[in-house]
Image (cartoon, rainbow, N blue to C red; front, top):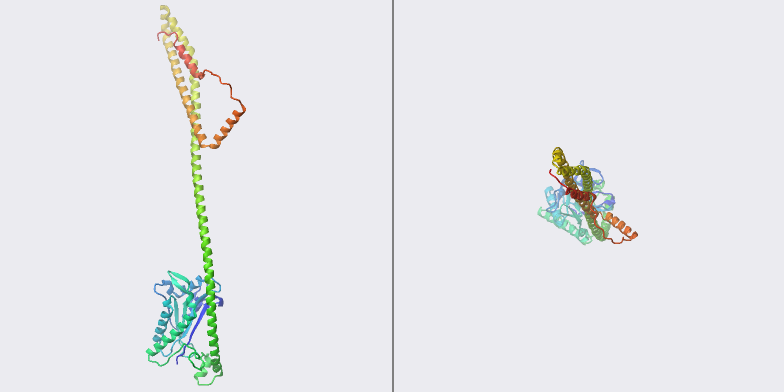
Length: 454
């Protein structure tokens, strides 16, 4: 006869267990645990009749990979005492065929777990060697978090309620009885305790291989009798313990939720502060960059102005040298011109002297022309000197405009000099022309003296 057995437990890291190891054992597979590098190899395990993963609609593809699923569960839980998954151990009606048992448990899992957002790793096991050959059972490993997008969301605390546990128990009893009735069997199971059902019977208990063999042979077993007596006490204590655990889990869940909310608030405040600091640093960097750009352009312009001033000074020096050379040429040719003019004047006095002067007249004309050309060159050189001085003054003004420190230093020196010396009394003086210009004017006046035929 079928018995009711539905045991729920939570696999946690605090007890030293891991979901990859549990899943590998239930499915008879090999799974490498990424968190620890441990290899869980149960490929030699026998009696695994069926294995599959059931998940809500729209779940990502990796959910259906057993190794990837439970490794992600391990990696998302950070606490050293984290609760990793929930497992149900359910006895299947032996009266049903293999396909009927498989369809019954699949329907039960979809209705009670997958429909609410859980991912279920379902494994059906046959009775082990030495066990009761009617002990067909299923292991169901359930995630504690919903699938959200391409990963896990927060833990669903409502799945920990005692009311939901009772609904799972009642649902299994109802669906199993419906499957038995549909298959034409009279056997039924009941999730309620014997006390709740008003029965004085002691609940049944799984026996070990030795006791099971004794009972199968029809012999009496004090061990079996004691086990049956103890089972009622254990089951009551277990139910009470489950209630205590459920309450403790609910309290722990509330505390964890409050802690997470506090952490999220702190992280949000810290993130806002960091964003403000980053924005302030970026504004300071941009302002500093703007100042550096302005200073760079000023230094570039100052360098160009200094180059222009230096070039203007070089041109002024060249113009002054040219003016000096022109003045020297005028001085050197002045005497020759005076002798030429005097010779022309003497030649005009008499026919004899005129005849004698015919031989010297070309030389006189050449000396006068050379002198006139030298005077013209001196005037041009003087104008070039004046233009070069203006260029130097303008270039120096640009340098001072671009170099406030140097301008301030010059102004300070001027002010200090003015403070030390009283200004001289005002005197009207005729402006003195430059020596070269005066020399040119005197030569021009002299050229207006006695003139003769060329």
